[in-house]
Each structure stands twice: as C-alpha cells, then as structure tokens.
Amino acid sequence: MDSGASSARRSRSGSPDLIASNAGTALPYATRSALHLKGLVPSGVEDFSAQESRALEQLHAKSTNLEKYIFLSWLRTTNIHLFYRLVLHNLKEIAPVIYTPTVGQACQEYSHIYPFLAPPNAVDGLYIPLTEVDNIDEIIENYRESIAEGDEPEITVITDGSRILGLGDLGMNGMGIPVGKLQLYVAAAGLNPDRCLPIVLDFGTDNPKYLEDPLYLGIRQKRPTDEAFYAAANRVVAALHTAFPSMFIQFEDFSTDHAFGLLDHWRERALCFNDDIQGTGCVILGGFISAVEQAGIPPRDQRILFVGAGSAGVGVAKQLVDYFVIEHRIPEEQAKAMFWFVDSRGMITANRGDKLAQHKVYFARHDNGDTQCASIDEALEYVKPTALIGLSTIYKAFNERILTRMNELNTDARPIIFPLSNPMTKAECTFEEAMRCTNNRVLFA
Image 1 (cartoon, rainbow, N blue to C red):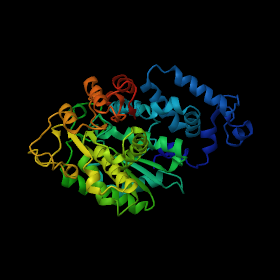
Image 2 (tube, rainbow, N blue to C red):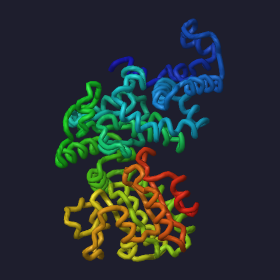
Image 3 (tube, rainbow, N blue to C red):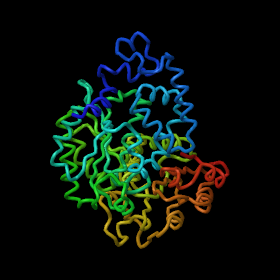
C-alpha cells in the first residue's frame, strides 16, 4: 500500500497523526513537541476561529465559483474538520459552491481539475471501470485497506454519469455528484464523513466531447448494451452489499431506463433508493401538498401537466398519485387520470404511434381519442391544467406565452407552476417570470 495514499486517507480517520492533520495551526505547543513537530511548523498557535477566518479570506479571494470549488475540495481532503466548520458556519454561501449550481460546471471540467482537488493518491471514493468489474472484490479490498478500522461506509452515493443533472452524459466526470451530495448529507444530517463512500461506475460515455478530450480520465469507449450494463452494475452492487451489508445505497443520475431497472432489481434485496425517482419526488411532494392546500380548488379537481417524462418526472408523478390515493382517498385509476405528460414527441398517449419506454406506459393517456398534441402549447389548450410541472431540462420551456395562458386558464384558482430542472441554466422559467406573467398569483417552487 502506498504510504502517501494511506496517510492521505487515514489522516481523516483515526491514525496517529489525526490530531496534527486536523488541528493544524491550532495544535498546542506541548502536543507539537510530543509529535516531534517542533521547528517543522510556524510557531504561532491559534484557535479554530482564526483558521476559519483565514480559510474564508482565501475563499473570497477566488474570482470564480469553480476556483472556489477547487479550493474547498482541497481543504476537505487535507483538513476535513476545518472544511466542515467552514461549511456549517457559512452554509448559505458555500452550499451552492459544493453542489448545485457550481457542481455542474465542476463535473463538466472534472478530468481537467481532478489533480487539484486533493493531494496525490488521496482516496476520496471508488472509480470502477467496466474493464475492472471482474476485479470488484480486489477493488473493495483496496478500499478497506485505505480506511481506518471501524470506518466501514454506512452510505454510498453511486452514479454512472450517464444523466448528470440536466447536462447529459458526462461519463466518469459525473463523480462530482456523489462527492457533492455526500458533503451536503454530512453538513445537514450530521453523517460521519469518514463513513461516506462516493462511487462512479466508469462504464464509458457516448459523449464525443469526452471521448475526444486528451485529458479525459475515464475509459475511452462507448457505453455498453443494456444486457452488459445490468450484468456489470449488478455485479458491482452485489459485491458492495456483500462487503458492507448494512450500507445504504443511493442510486444517482443514471439514465432513465437504467434508473428504474436498477431500483426494481435491488429495492427488495438491499437497503437502497433512487434519488431522482424517489428523493426528488419526496421533496416536490412536500411543496405540492402546500400548493394544493392554497390553490383554491378541491384536490380531486387538479389537472396536472408534466413537461418531461424521465425518471424524475415519472417518479415524482407516481408519488403525487400516492398522495391523492392515501390522503384524499381518490381511487388510483381516477388519481392517475389527473396527470398528463409531454415529452420530446408531444403528449404521451397509448396511440401516439411510437413505442413508449416502459416507465412511460403507466401514464399514457387512453382517453384522447384521435387527439394528439405535438407541443406544450397544444397540450396546454387540450388539458387546461391547474398545475404545470417542469422536469424537461429545457431552458425557458415555460415562456411568457405559456405562463400567461396558465394564469388565464386559472381565474378561479391560483396556478401551480413548478419549473424543477437544474442547474438553473436548464430551468423552465424563473420565479420572477412566473410572478410577472400571473399577476403575482402563482404558487411556485
């Protein structure tokens, strides 16, 4: 085991130099002597607040959010205690840097900035290439050797980088998402950072930008067939579950079909969930419940139009169906009939003429007769929705005409408009636009 790699990881976990590595300039003089550091560090001894002030000063000196991201990543991998003190005391400022929207740019540039995010050979997660899946047990053992005893992971966020935020296929560069998501969990939920494991399945990419990038650090091949993908992904998850049977597995930013496929396969076999299908739905459900209560019409009279029918959109809608069934005792078929979907080919109907992806079949309309809507505008006139929810990743999809028409269609109720695509460069509209076009009547999230 490389001693530098061991030190880089173990200094976060419980090795003899834990105090020195995480106390830094706050290490008392007597302790410095005991650890044979006398003369090897500056003589000044300061408190943690002074360290935070210096770190914040350096953060503010960075001219772009990407530079701030790189600085914070280096700080996290060299002095994890100072990093989380800084995050917790400045969460509103730092959260958008370590996660959205900055993490989107960081992922796009990940191969270019990777060497500057941590010291050489520091272990900060698992990169599992498709070409090494047969060696997954060895990879897991390598990871075990890099962590302190008792620090086995209790949660992993795992992605294959195939559908990162609204940015598409970023390949191995998608690692920024598991890393960032787990940082938020530590800061917001108090998880032990030494027991969080980010993982990227480096199964190739269909994005020519990265295949042709000489600095790209992932494997340079197209993504595998579905059969090969599931064989490899299930092999990895099975090995992880065997090695760490109590570890919570969060599937993150997989392509839509694979997101549903993995969840369906593992939800009864391991402690897991899919953040895009279930996590996004939970958060949106909370906002939607509040909106329904304030809309001014009975819940069963809601007509909900989704723009975007990927894993997030369908996952959210299914949770909203459950809400209507459980809370308002609306029969499932009747609750399902309150939802319409528009994807890239128009309104989703059973007789549209194309083969629907399996996850779209549940919400396909059977009551449209010969009516087909090719656009959001046409669907708006046909459905006359009381709620418009965007998970399309199409910037400004809810333009002024659509927002104004939503207001006109809901004169007796407050229109519900949720443009939920991220990052902001993919959002269907802004709060300001929705307010202006609805005379400040919109219920917005």
